[in-house]
Length: 144
Image (spheres, rainbow, N blue to C red):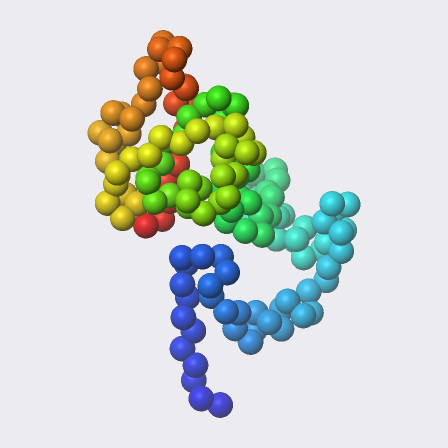
């Protein structure tokens, strides 16, 4: 069998094709209803990650979008504002999820390929005592 070079592309959680070993793991995985904590594979993964980070629990998210939307919801309140780059995935490619799921608006920074400076963030923060603008409560940063 010819050696195959595996290409890993982290631009999307749907781009990289699984290797043969990954496919075998998927087919042989012990599955169950994760709502009732009956999925042995997910339970083992969550326990392993919790232990790795020294936490009591961990939570598996099957997509980056799901993880992003949950993080925004946990770190904000409706009416808050999130600072992010103008090309941020949460702003451009998640179907308006930040506003729909969390009731937040996004203030866009004109970064360089998704990267921006601390000075740009400071300039983008709304004055907390100016009641006409939303309260800035979160800065969202992505891998460039």
